[in-house]
Length: 257
Image 1: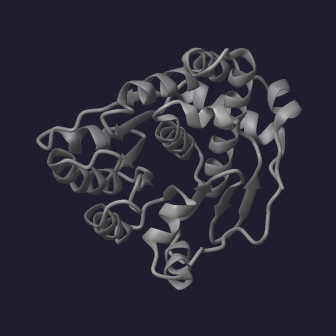
Image 2: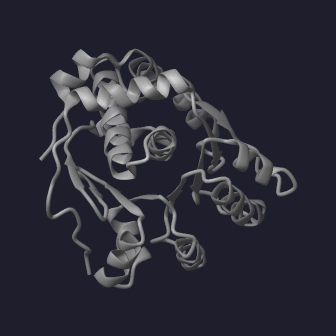
């Protein structure tokens, strides 16, 4: 069964996208990222290029303090070892107690039953944003009613693919930016989850934050792909594109359905 999402769409003006990007740059939100071992360095560099600040500790004895004092929390399940299993509930509880947004990225739950069960447990804390691909969406929910119930509780679903779809209780977005070269570099998707967390840190409309974060990251990916000679030069070009992204870049490239 394939779950459908984002039947209706909302406009996304380039000026709004750039205004939120400038808000991230101005406020420099700190994102505490519990992410996988492969993605840590790249995710930190993406956040810095965007204008945000990363922190990454996994230690159970200190992760709550880091999460509570950050502006947003990213939980990525890409390498779900015992340390991360212990740290994640502590970080989520501390972030939510402090009123910080929580972004869940349930990586590869379609490949691992224990990971899928752990992700389903995390749905009980009602994360602000869940970022996932189509296969992960189908694995996470046992039917459309479960997805609807989560959305009704205030969670935003951001489903990535050739067309990115954002669904929420109030508004939906369908987004068409991105480049195939982004999938030829490890951890690009995981770093994108951190970008969504950074935008959620500065925008209370979580659906708008998710749509804007996806658009900014994917437009930067398009620019980087045009400049790069292949995967090896794509990564630095992506960081430079994020760092220098302008209103004109967004006006020229932003594509919505």
